[in-house]
Image (cartoon, rainbow, N blue to C red; front, side):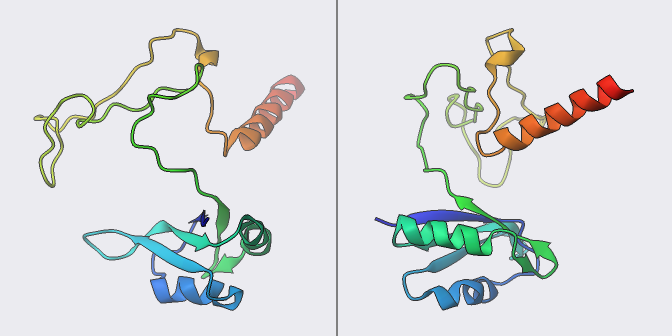
Length: 156
């Protein structure tokens, strides 16, 4: 079973060869993929590293998380699994954003599905603001920020 790791905060001028060179010392069981912009060919700021075992994934996260690549401290974490549709979502989780494909609209190549090119917004059915859950990858950081804000408002 292979494990995918998300590698974020990559510099825009990074190449796939440079990303692979960072992880080359870990052996043949490690492959890297850089996500690039289709038009410019430049790095979009993230990529993926695939490793063979969960233990190796944990070692890479510990070793490379925060590593400086061209003056950027990279962030490595286990990638969330891909999902086609979120019909099996547990209750209380945030709703998936509505796309043209899932709402029955026709998608045209290279353009927006909205004829007027206006931004589409979605709303939730619940009026309770606590019903929306933060992304679990950032929940701890969000909680720290809330605590800092609460201490600042009580001190002023």
